[in-house]
Every structure is written in C-alpha cells, then in structure tokens.
Length: 124
Image (cartoon, rainbow, N blue to C red):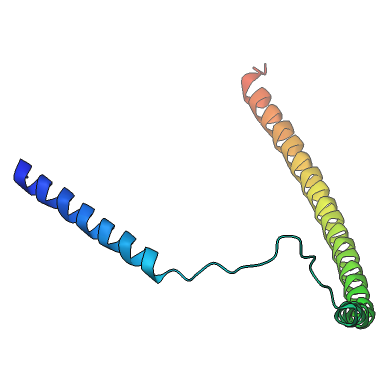
C-alpha cells in the first residue's frame, strides 16, 4: 500500500465522518423543555392496583411452590434412602467376596507350601 492510498483512505474517512456528523446534528430533535423543580406524580390508584395484583399472585402461587418444594424434598429423601440401601448391599457383597478370595489365597498358599516342602524334603 502506497502513501497515496493511505492518504486517500484517511481523507475519505474524514469526509464521510464530517458529513455524518453534520447530518446527525440536523436530524436530532429539539430538547424537551421540562421544568426543573417539578415533582414526579404518582397515581395512588395505580400503586394500589399493582400491590393488589402482586398480593393476589403471591396468594395463588405460594401454595403451589410450597407443594413443589415438599414434593422435591420427599423425592430426594427417598432417593438418598434407596442409594444408601444399594451402597449397603454393595458393601456386604464386597466383604463377602474379599473373605472368599482370602480363603482361596490361604488354601493355595497352604497347598503350595506342602507341595514345595514335600518335594524339597529328602526321605530316607
């Protein structure tokens, strides 16, 4: 890219930016004139209606939420109980298998000991 190309790009950007700034200034609406010391007005009936709608909503939805929470608690309690039972059965099964393996190892070591000692002894 030559110096001429860079100069053309910069000038094009400046021209487009200036034109856009000029158009933006003309298209903006006039500022709204509001008194500085005016207090916002609050409609008391609208506030009462809003509070009543929130109150009605909470009276309708709270029992449903409470029922969902209780149902979820019962399901979790049941699932934890079932999991504890399964873990207990698994633990008992593992203990039994370990006892069986230990007895097999003792039997094999006893037989190997007799076999090795039987051949290693010289009988006269």
